[in-house]
Image (cartoon, rainbow over all chains, first blue to last red; front, side, top):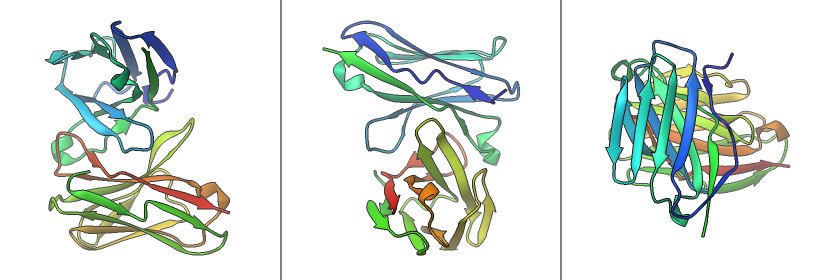
Length: 113
Length: 111
């Protein structure tokens, strides 16, 4: 079983829809959870960062962590064509000791105008 | 990308030749990483550094070496390039928490 599983997509949704992106993981020691966004031919950029379980909201984006189910989600409200990108989940046990971040393979998202 | 630059951005090289990619940061971050990204494989860690002259191997280090003689520079060398090393290479930096900052990538083609 891979440490982090993420559906590669592509996921195509109409503009304005709510998007749900998900990852599952196997290592219960993961405490820090991240979402990166990667536009075509660009490097990944950090989008959301959360610690432990719960929700975190930033504008149209909400990150949700369910440690009991080992499941994390990223919701995008009022999706825009500019949200079209690959979204990578990522997680680590203790970034202050720089335990290396483990990345999912990414989900390609297309927002249709 | 603010604070981190990779060079070159694109390179085509022949099989068997040595290639060096450069990552330069202006953030004075302690940690630096080299990844390759390939379809179906995602990001895979090649080598990383936790300080000057302190480096270690990642999951796909065979055929690659690194050097870090200054805090700001992390070099990745392909000793003898092979077609399987055709990929997009990303450098990342970290201060030890709260995620990585990635460079814009180097697209390497080995022919």
